[in-house]
Length: 435
Image (cartoon, rainbow, N blue to C red; front, side, top):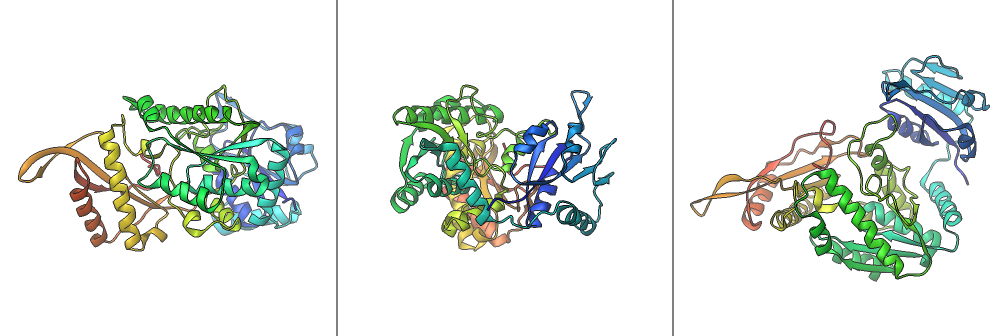
């Protein structure tokens, strides 16, 4: 059953994602598209019931005021215009009401009274739609999937297995930037328990060699993303019929990598870091989902809780938590301190309460005292945040006894470390990751 859809056209708003989520909360599917989408492209989208032209402060691009195709207003679909002059439509607003209840009532009226949309947005229907789309896209060809073992790639793997079965080959690349025990866990779950076609590639030396001396975080992300693709291309050449690359791209990845009316926050390896000469077509069935929706999708697909609620882990791995130019010394400090943090959070029951928690080791040292002598070593920074959709995040308040135990263990068990700090910065203005 195809779901009804409300299209949101980005005409410079800073809160397209908030509007999209509000529509989905009503049980109606929504997607965000750029302001310059054509009428023909809109007509090709399935089951569009209405359009929201969502204007805002970013309506100037390269000094020119942007606008939508005026023919959109004559498509025969209900249109809501927000902060856009001159404007036409069934509902015209200078801005969204500040009162959340009023805004929700207005949206409800537009979606159901004007657009006549049905509240049929749910994960069961979404999965059915994506399976149909994947089968149509892939045909009888094969798909190569980058399987990190994180939530996004795990859910993609489960969905693709359901859609195309043994046409899927999963590749797990150990780039030397994995968490402690991560690769072993991936092999156990996917190869031994889920019987997936899994290829394991240990490319530690290859990645660390490419990253030697590279301090800029954007350069690191692009190197890691580009090298990932090269590894997959090499593995694909060993296989017959591989024409597609599966990816766990989700909507916050796309938003943060920048659009025509939104500045880039940071590039993601599966959005901004892909090489121009990519030899594959992409299969990205989760690219319109927020993080909480990805987890709901995993549950609907029958994945176990310990996989669905697994700690989020960035594609570049510990490479963006070993700040600055990566060294093996600091990389090991990140890996070991992260393992201690995860173990103690689990002991305290925080692993099911806190959305994401990890450690960071920056590229500077401070003076300390060990064994009654001066030492000059690195700090470890702890970070623990809660969020629904990864677009904003708040700081988790951790009891002092837990923090003190974590600190004591890190200082005693992790080499080359003499300080532990706790990051209290929410998103915004900080991002969840440091790089």
